Image (cartoon, rainbow, N blue to C red; front, top):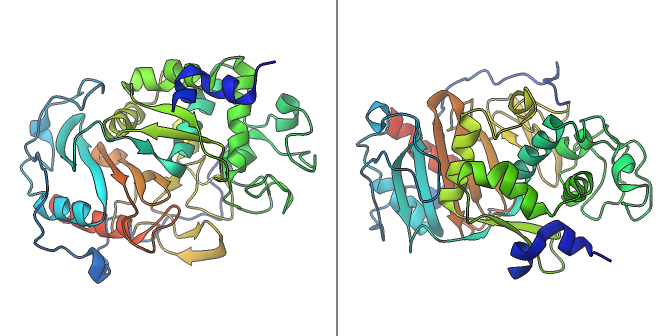
Length: 367
């Protein structure tokens, strides 16, 4: 009998209908708004260990070819020294910026091959895979999970009414252990229950997860070093995703270009709009800037303002624990990625002081 682990991951892994709701308004401020960052995040004169500030029309390794000339970019010739210093002293290992399809700047403590588990940033990757499954007619947002996995995919078997959309929007009412803590659609609970979508993808395709991801997303994005793998026991989700900064940039660029082949029509528009009325800054497994309020994992409270007030309002992001980041700014054709250790002690899941500090520096370069 084929094990769940084998079906999900394959050989490579074993080696290692959203809609904008009326209650969700955009923030009054629609441009980058500088804010005070903590002393730990302010710029110092530390010397970067490695930089390569000159723009180039060559993409990162294994990434798609650039779509425009770097000469047209707003960040060409900018002094990234303060940002390199910031990334280095906040435990960064890999950082890079693409603008208009060209590598504007990169910084690596060692080199571009640095790879690690991208934590909850993988959720946004899963959203793209589900979007392709919807495009192929294999599933829809309204499909009940019970129809795909049967009625025993939660420990108590109380899964009736939970749909694909609920898992994408974090409105399933399930906690990390897939225990029912609220009726579906009546709350926003950030949890690892989204990982049922891995089982949905392998069940509806009859294929291993890495095989599906390679054909549908990693291949088109040139993300040859990205691989789903079996995490050690005890983590929130049993499947993790290892990736590199160049791979994340390739995925981000693919999103800017309209998404991978076969993506359901309008999927990105749906993904980048509020998916429920509770956390207006959360789409279909993507974080959204530019909204009037936001909620954070583990906090049943709405905070006023944008998730990252120093960033452009149009920013969408894949945010992972301990500051694994993929930022996309469609209006500027901008993709930024960061991998490494926890940036500051207060960094946990999703938003952290690192986001605010980094985008204060990036926004200053554009101005």
